[in-house]
Image (tube, chains in turn purple, blue):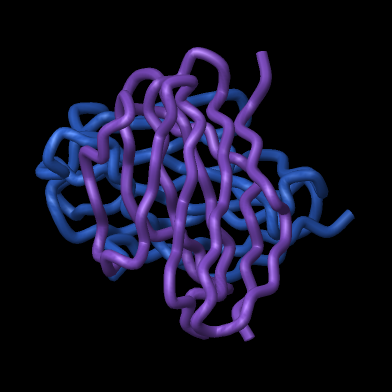
Length: 111
Length: 114
């Protein structure tokens, strides 16, 4: 059984650019959610996908968007990057509601 | 905004001692969970306690929940250097709209010294 894997592990982008982060869910899991974790803070919920549909969203602007594919892998896209978007982005998958199984995250730095 | 607040923000103890972390939250919940995060890595689920439970044990972990005070505590007994990590409480929010949104606190950074 493979766990949740995220790519890339680190990324540096310039303000105004666009970025795509990827996540492979744990085998058998059909739900994926994304969290943003700023330095020294707890993770904040961005959105969740269930069977390829977004079924919940946190307080993030529309420039944060996502996709879930038929194999339940997922992407997080962020357009028009801002300096405050610098954070650790965590993907989590689950079969039932909880617990969530997290990947090791993508560290995004926006300069 | 974050619902929960952990207390203390940081805790430093010696191996073999017990570590107690507290969490307070604001709204009604279905369940409360504790997660652990090693430096710069993903979170690992430790334990889930439902709103109708008062205490739960898992190995060296003991979690209590007081819904009247909207608070929870995590006790790690006989701590080890490998327990060094950040610990987060997370609530689901009883009105989360049917999806698995977790609301995390800012965490307690635990350092266990050999």
